[in-house]
Image: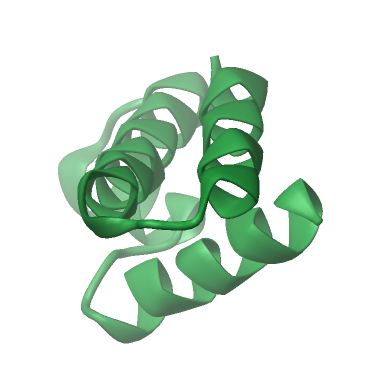
Length: 71
Protein backbone atom coordinates (compact mmCIF):
# COMPACT_ATOMS: atom_id res chain seq x y z
CA UNK A 1 0.00 0.00 0.00
CA UNK A 2 2.79 2.45 0.81
CA UNK A 3 4.30 1.87 -2.65
CA UNK A 4 1.06 2.97 -4.27
CA UNK A 5 1.04 6.14 -2.16
CA UNK A 6 4.69 6.77 -3.01
CA UNK A 7 4.23 6.30 -6.76
CA UNK A 8 1.09 8.45 -6.84
CA UNK A 9 2.92 11.21 -4.98
CA UNK A 10 5.83 10.99 -7.41
CA UNK A 11 3.40 11.30 -10.33
CA UNK A 12 1.88 14.39 -8.72
CA UNK A 13 5.36 15.82 -8.16
CA UNK A 14 6.38 15.45 -11.81
CA UNK A 15 3.02 16.63 -13.18
CA UNK A 16 3.09 19.62 -10.82
CA UNK A 17 6.30 20.96 -12.29
CA UNK A 18 8.94 18.86 -10.52
CA UNK A 19 11.88 18.21 -12.80
CA UNK A 20 13.34 14.78 -13.50
CA UNK A 21 16.93 14.02 -12.51
CA UNK A 22 18.24 14.23 -16.09
CA UNK A 23 16.68 17.70 -16.46
CA UNK A 24 18.21 18.87 -13.19
CA UNK A 25 21.68 17.64 -14.19
CA UNK A 26 21.41 19.25 -17.61
CA UNK A 27 20.18 22.65 -16.42
CA UNK A 28 22.08 23.12 -13.16
CA UNK A 29 25.23 21.20 -14.03
CA UNK A 30 25.20 19.21 -10.79
CA UNK A 31 25.67 15.50 -10.30
CA UNK A 32 23.02 12.82 -10.59
CA UNK A 33 23.31 12.07 -6.85
CA UNK A 34 22.46 15.71 -6.02
CA UNK A 35 19.52 15.57 -8.42
CA UNK A 36 18.18 12.42 -6.76
CA UNK A 37 18.44 14.08 -3.34
CA UNK A 38 16.52 17.06 -4.68
CA UNK A 39 13.73 14.83 -6.03
CA UNK A 40 13.56 12.79 -2.83
CA UNK A 41 13.21 15.92 -0.74
CA UNK A 42 10.47 17.28 -2.99
CA UNK A 43 8.47 14.04 -2.85
CA UNK A 44 9.06 13.78 0.90
CA UNK A 45 7.70 17.30 1.42
CA UNK A 46 4.56 16.41 -0.53
CA UNK A 47 4.10 13.27 1.58
CA UNK A 48 4.52 15.26 4.79
CA UNK A 49 1.89 17.68 3.57
CA UNK A 50 -0.50 14.77 2.89
CA UNK A 51 0.22 13.43 6.37
CA UNK A 52 -0.99 16.65 8.01
CA UNK A 53 -4.46 16.43 6.50
CA UNK A 54 -5.06 12.66 6.52
CA UNK A 55 -7.64 11.39 9.01
CA UNK A 56 -7.43 7.62 8.48
CA UNK A 57 -4.84 5.99 10.75
CA UNK A 58 -3.95 3.14 8.39
CA UNK A 59 -3.25 5.54 5.53
CA UNK A 60 -1.18 7.71 7.89
CA UNK A 61 0.96 4.67 8.74
CA UNK A 62 1.52 3.96 5.05
CA UNK A 63 2.49 7.58 4.42
CA UNK A 64 5.04 7.38 7.25
CA UNK A 65 6.44 4.14 5.74
CA UNK A 66 6.79 5.88 2.37
CA UNK A 67 8.58 8.84 3.98
CA UNK A 68 10.99 6.50 5.76
CA UNK A 69 11.64 4.64 2.51
CA UNK A 70 12.88 7.88 0.94
CA UNK A 71 15.53 8.44 3.62
